[in-house]
Figure 1: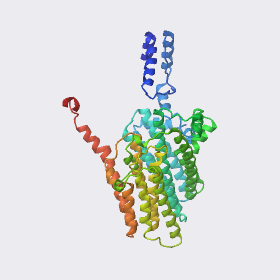
Figure 2 (figure 1 turned 45 degrees about the vertical axis):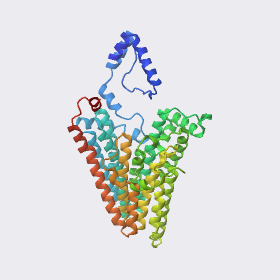
Figure 3 (figure 1 turned 135 degrees about the horizontal axis):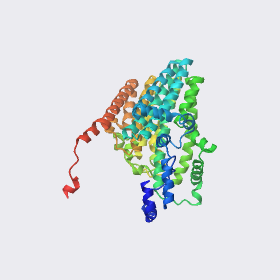
Figure 4 (figure 1 turned 180 degrees about the horizontal axis):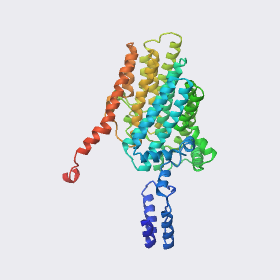
Amino acid sequence: VTAARTAATTPAAGSAVDRLFADLTACGTLTFAHRVRLLVARRVTTAPELAAAEAAVAAVDEDRAELRLSVKERDDFFTTFFVSTWSPYVTRTAARLGLSPTAVTMISVLFAVAAAVLFGVGGRPALVAGAVLLYLGFVLDCVDGQLARYTRQFSAWGGWLDTMADRAKEYLVYAGLGYGATHAGFRYGWALAIAAMTLQTVRHMTDTWYGVLHDEAARRPRPATGEGGGIGGKLNAASTRVQADTGSVSYWLKRTVVFPIGERWALIALTVALFNPLVALCAVLVWGTLAFAYTGALRTLRARWMRVPVLTTVDTALHRDDGPLVRWLPPVRRPGPLPLAVFGALGAAVLLVVGLLRVHADEAVPRWAVPLALLVLLVAGLGARAAHDGPLDWLVPAALRAAEYLFAIAVGVVGEVPPWLIFGYVFVLTLHHYDLTARLEKRQSAPPLHAATLGWDGRSALLALASFAGIASAGLLTLGTYLLVAFAVSVVLAWVILPARARRTPAPVGGGDRLSG
């Protein structure tokens, strides 16, 4: 209202705002329009307009508006119609109870853990109860963000914890489903759980880096493509039209087909309650694979149209998760980092397939197979020092994640490691990699103990050595435990010790540059 009163009493104010906007745009500042919901925002130039604006502001129920604004304006189908319709009441209750968003996040984790345990126990009552707890846990997962927006309790720690907790909850549920399917007599229950976790992690890596690509493209001038940008430009225009048509059938289909978290939770809850953990895992894998193929194809075409290098703007070695062995490899400029990463992943995939076939036939895998697959895997490191400036090089981190996971799973299969141990090791790896992506999204530096995690190449070499020595189980267990401890210590250092030390350290008086000048 103060701004409106100034605009009404100072005729030049409106033109000054216009000039400011024009100047910012001329400087290359990214500007965009944001629709105002529930609250009042008006530009006025006369006294009657000012009076009308003040009356409109006074008529707003501010608390009710803030509660509704805490809900995302655009969310996925299941979340919009089956969660957000009543989650604001839970948000208000949590605020009145004095719960913090972090506390709500931890309660949602407990709900997911309880659901996973019930899925493992089996039996219709336990499966139905687990499905209900899973749904309620997802509601609380939405409430923690709504509570943060409603109470204005934002923090880097809360954002990081929410990201990490979401993935940990989902994969613990996969573990419960895998155990439950195995306990019910299906031999490959754990294998399906491992496949679901691996697929979802690689999908998330592509989602993260495509988001970075999209943001970077928005900051740059659109490339001259001619003829509407070809199929990539046409797909981009079609996607923009669908996103703008909020509430249409095509809009909801587009948001649902990509298999977001709400739809995954709903599918698991329904299939496990109506059928069993095996059907739930199969459903997740089928829909997840189709969604990955759909989004991968469309994003590849759009990325080729955007022609925007992304990894040139970040610490490439960090987000590739390169280790000491890669630094010794000679740089290779051609055929590029992405083909080399895909080649390394294919080598790990071949070892996995051979291992599965040999184990199924009760035949031993030759001892030289794992070292050979390691050499093929290390080919992915030859492109580490090459420029990651290709239109599809944003896929390199996801390809490297797939390569490392497949190699670790293959080592476990060849060494006849218990499947739950393979799941646990890959789960620890996903925590490490989600930590990197969460820091990327928050524009934060590397984890304090990142160098101690050895990189994808160092970890794979140790597993290959353990496999060759005939101690694959001990290798996975020891290395997994080491990485989990390193992750926990890194979290404590990053979010407790180092911030406390920074608060105790007084800032230099006047600034270092000024004193030295």
